[in-house]
Length: 435
Length: 134
Image (cartoon, rainbow over all chains, first blue to last red; front, top):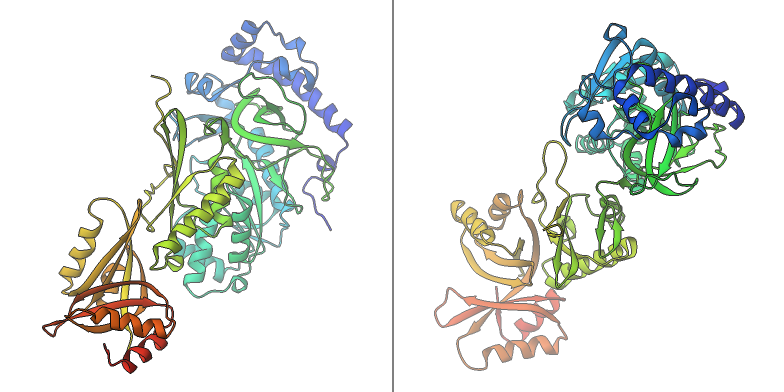
């Protein structure tokens, strides 16, 4: 039987949701126009007045906000309430430039934690559960966001933060954690560490995991589920919109329900900004419908994704977003074909390789070249050159099927592809197209 | 008695071979025979060493190593010696994947290493033909 944290809204009819959204957007646009000069200027430039926005259908008339706007208005430029009314700040890691700081009133924290609580309950969480939070705590939204949601559900919360895997495993075993929340790569690492210590997947009491904050694939889900003996659920969010919990996966495990009573989602063409019809692939744009302190309207996430309104077996009526298929800014166009690094990762995992790879794009005789360097699995390497060439050819053929273009595969010894503490350098583009 | 060959997967770029040999040298492992099979991007260094376990221990953390059983036959330093050996293997219908030779301890002879699909068959046939096998 399906459980809900806030059943009325999570299973509301389309009409009811639209009614709530329309009421909220009218109020929100007025609030932003009056209190955020930066956005008021953008609206004025476009000739849009608050009274032009009467329903969510009118949202498409509003100007977009991008990461560049957030940088330009750093730190207080998009703040919509007096600082006195704010109770917390979170911040992005700043890997792509200047940090973004987001502000929260108590109301904002409450609605965020409600969203996370819905995600925990959708993953099977109840007040009986022990939730091990191994997202980082601090400026990052992951730790405190999940922590707050876990409190709302009434779970026993273990605020582990990230790292110190020995301690994670000790607490997991000694205190019988039933739900684990972290990044999918850390979940995979904990799975490997458990196996190294001789534990079998059913030696722990975990039943579910809620993983997010970085891209992961369906294949990675299956491998994490197997290594930890759990069901793995995806959760989505950005510091700019609040944090994890903007969208969450249910028992159907085939897409994330967007908390539509708080966030309005659109899919746009990343080049023209035009809103695309339902089911189209494009860039995901969010409008915060009732956040007070940092209410971003039409924020361009850069995540490429598809929205669907197909009826979900869990009974929730919120629109579903697929796993982001890549980012509009890391989409590669090679020989005219759109290629996302995540597709390459999927093929590697399907073919039994580790997802440690590097893509090198070049140009020879006016044709793009694609070279993929992949760390070989020692147990599959033989002493015969022909066997290794066969492995490379097999992988190249699987890549061609998935990507639509054929790469040259280079197997390299393990641990030779540079890893950094944060984000690995996956793509080297040597094409000089703009000289 | 088959002997153990180590095969080390190397990227085809400067310093790779140097690094492997340096480690073996520091560990006091003697390389008795070696050959490299190379294609454009990578090579496979195949070696027969004085101490297989020690060589593995100093290399396996950072390299892909496979161990392969190979046949090593002693061949006289005279015309037709290799032909006789190959004749014996041919009659046993043994397929040779690759082979290489190195100077043996006995003056006037060489050791020939064969990677074959049927070690026992190869050895039996070589002994039958009067070839000394290591």
